[in-house]
Image 1 (tube, rainbow, N blue to C red):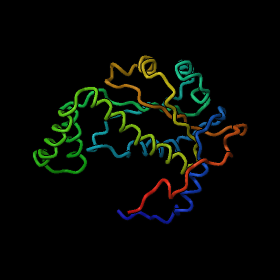
Image 2 (cartoon, one colour):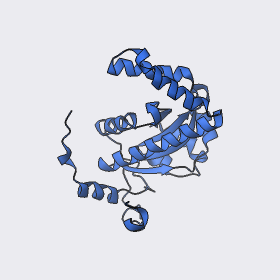
Image 3 (spheres, one colour):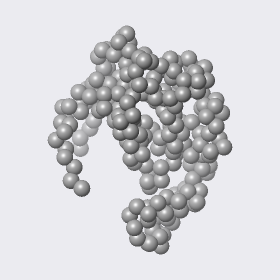
Length: 219
């Protein structure tokens, strides 16, 4: 497949990223259209992960009652209830050989071939996960969700959707309210998505960033 890269210039991308900010106040009267949300959802599905194992699940919350139940476990941050879509990024609490085999079966389904051709890859993945205890595997899975968070926020900016990443939440209470434990999942981080309120004073504030020369080294 040949991709037409002319639709978004480097300068256009920078302008989108300059436009985005961690939205503090959303307009609760505005809802993300289904066709735009579909693109955002696809970006989550297409997020790269270690070995391609995708040790995560994403919960998109639109139900007002559930948002209000989560609010007191989110430091009372109004973004939770005022946004259009509140996405909770969760990590799988275990990565078993069965999970690896499920991924390999999916690979054969999509790409074709025979499962025994993937045995060396399977051995590598099994060896990697066996070298970690349960706590290390969970930490690894949670770190993967931050790759998805970055992709989610960048996609939103390109599509003109505001976002606010949120770590100030109580994962234990989120897990309880969303029934995650019985699904083998646990809350990692969240992100509110929607449209900024015209009264959000932070919308036009200049970004405070160090110079590129301090952040990037070219060798």
